[in-house]
Structure formats: structure tokens, C-alpha cells
Length: 122
Image 1 (spheres, rainbow, N blue to C red):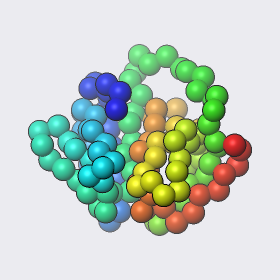
Image 2 (image 1 turned 30 degrees about the vertical axis):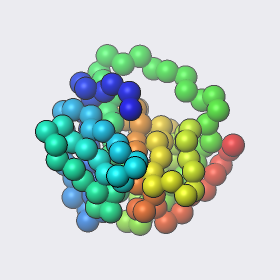
Image 3 (image 1 turned 90 degrees about the vertical axis):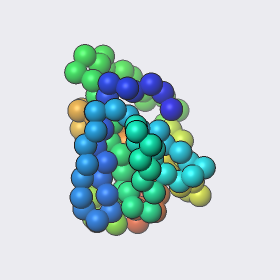
Image 4 (image 1 turned 180 degrees about the horizontal axis):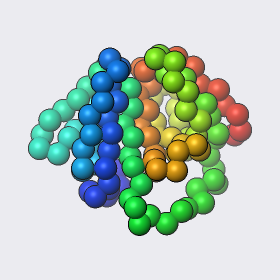
């Protein structure tokens, strides 16, 4: 995972709760867990998504190449549209760059929390 040490993150759990952190966690696909700084570990079974907020000084980037535009519907009814670069239907999760929230740089979506994905553009 890229270095996001100064990026604020929001962890959204499947039970509807939310936690915030100042440091980016490590996403461990092999263990299907998010590893928080300080050795805490959260199973993908408990998570909906991890939102990585943009740094206030971040420059806008054109990241539209080689991405699929998708709409992701979560099991709680929330729908997020964005660009997916590494979506694999059998993977435990994938990264999405949201189209409608300029404060969020990317979201790690836990596949188990998704009920539907519509591909709008390949």
C-alpha cells in the first residue's frame, strides 16, 4: 500500500458504527484484515469500507485512465459511484476512487459488504 501516514481515515463497520484514525492502516488481503497502527486488527467480516480522506494540500489528479466506472451497492443500501482499477469479483476487496465526494481520495471496499455492482463503463 502506498504511504498515507498523514492521511485521515474513516472505518465504516457493517453494524453501522464508524471509527476515525489519523494514520492509514495496512490492508492485508491475504489475512482478510485491516491492520491498524499499534497492532490492532479488524477482520473484513466486520467492515464495510475504509475511506481515505484527501490531504488538504493534495493536488487534484486525473486518474481516469484504465478504470471502470462502477456503482457499488452495500448491504445497508448505500450506493457509491467511482472508478475501480483493480476490481475482481472473487477478491475479498478492491479500491474505488469516488466520483461524488471530493474529500475522499479512495475507498477500500470489502466485497462481503456489497450486494450489487453495476459496471457503467469499462
